[in-house]
Image (tube, rainbow, N blue to C red; front, side):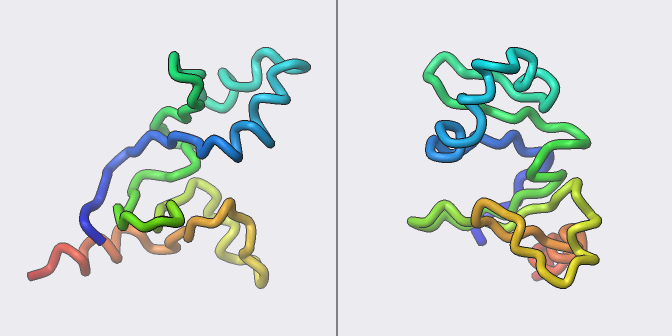
Length: 106
């Protein structure tokens, strides 16, 4: 882990945007706005930071070839499920502040 980002925006991976987000715009023009998302000039979709943002309040930066990272989540209820495979591949951290505190120790 190389760093911690606070209140990170989420640049939606292109394959997720193509498959799940952009097609919805054809039938639901308000889709992005309701999810606090914008279409960037370069064609990427970004979810802005905020209380409902998919990455939550903390993102643990760990560059890797798979673009998999650890992050907080606003969906705290996911941690009560026996099957928590509800992600696009990243790993939701149940106690991100505690993890951040451990990582910042010297």
